Length: 374
Length: 119
Image (cartoon, rainbow over all chains, first blue to last red; front, side, top):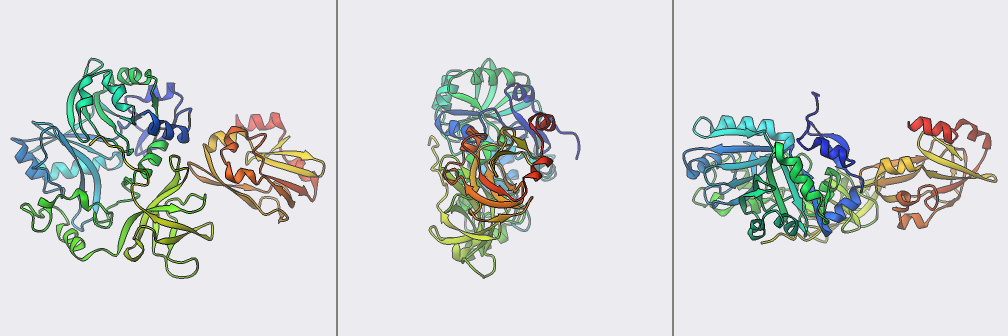
């Protein structure tokens, strides 16, 4: 393993009392003084500030939106062409076997497409984009900007103090907004299930912007620990745990992310890696599905917990892929894959923890209702 | 009070030893969300896993510090695991063990030694 990288906010994290841990090649704050539980609850009650600068920011530029969009559609099963200017969408890079190489956000910012990918996958994603898109479409990794997220019911009130324009943005809108004297690329989105914003800010101005936000009554710095429990309660996938190169979007329950126009029978059906497998899964159904899971007792069921249909005997029916404690629900929460026969909400199944089978119920996702500003 | 390298504290009350985890351990664990206690009456041997403690981050075990019998467990802790963070040295004891041989206590650190141990 090489030297760990630092984000432009490293010094601020340390000053704020963060416990720093290695994550995807970066030294990142896992928690601050409040601890994971209080940070989680604070985000759901007010506003949390997250450093997500480890994620990859990439600009795709070509002759026109249509040219870039149609080229990008060869990599993702999403409607890129139909994405309006100033709008963002969730996407997936698929592989030839119909598995998921990464999940991402992409935004139509007028003269370019702005793509945000996971830290652990970014080198592979960028190489894949270069090979698929260049030379007609240029692929530029943005390395001189930080990325922060402000999440929670008070995020709008807090950020609107710096620019009233952000209050007018709807969920998944993107805009260029001046914040604290600096040009920022803002989207109304996040990965916590709460309303909020993701803000790409020049590295040199990132710390000052964060300080202004952290000085506000409702804003606290939040680490990766709470980010994980927030996204888990919100039913959102962690790449590498809940989705992977071996998981099809249909197994993962991400069909909603594949717009009609790209599906079988659509105007621009297929043409992305693994289309045949994914269309087959859509038409014929899948043997296993990603579901939300509510352990019935107090014991958390962590990733890797093996699942069974009954309290005794039988072969495994699946596995927990993310699991822990949900501070909002004050109960353990999990997600994982089960056989399609056990995937209906309300089905009681069992997970083996320390040699004992404990009951859990297949639960509707998100486990905590999302509060996006539609 | 004595301390183990597993960050347990041990307080002798007659021939019974009360066992909990240190403040340092509770800080390292983070918010505790689940505790599984042993059954009173269980005979245990030193270093046997007797409790499970799970925090928001991970699961860990508490080992029996001595040979003996578990004579009492702190049942209210099961419904309020957060006490381990709020009051690790007081309210949040885990179990009481009737020691077969109290001289096993001599193996453990006193407060000054434990402070050195955690740096």
